[in-house]
Length: 226
Ligand code: ATP
Ligand code: MG
Image 1 (cartoon, rainbow, N blue to C red):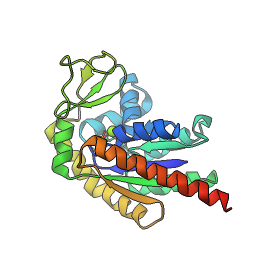
Image 2: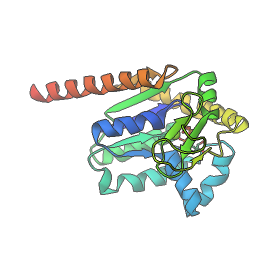
Image 3: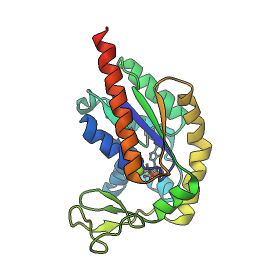
């Protein structure tokens, strides 16, 4: 099963992708997280990506397309994948379609997490990530028991370098210019669903769960009748 999670910065892609991964047993790949790892390790991709990311711009398609091609060749993802943050532009979506078609695959679910810009910006400004276990927390929604320390594992909490007001504005600009047209590309095809994530995370989680249940019911009844 191939699932794409689309949505503006702060829409909750990482949070809900982790849930979908738990539910389906499929690996969750976040392009942003992999890029941040590459920046930290100073790999060739990381060195090229850093200035774009720090400025709140997208990393050029040419690098992202090379990245996804290598990723999809990895046998670890042969049974499926939850992609969070990729694709983000029409050329990326077209490139992904082509690579999948070459493998006889196509996307099974394209899920748009839809949020207002104000709500998303508030969330980004109060978001912290655990440096140890990677959990994403929102301090405005739920303060930690010990400030600065992850409730889940005791690791130290970090604020992402691009979660500052000026860079957030830039990221929204990129989303409107490059990603919204791509969303229309997917919307006009099948397997497209939207969930509004302006609501509390537990309410959204329930909707995501219901959607996955509906899809598995439809898939199993489809295969039973041939
Ligand atoms: P959130 O983590 O809240 O979903 P986001 O979508 O802005 O917010 P990431 O997905 O982590 O954050 O991406 C961080 C940065 O990494 C982006 O601003 C961009 O520079 C780069 N990036 C990630 N995915 C892509 C992509 N598919 N194409 C180009 N650049 C990307
Ligand atoms: Mg993310």
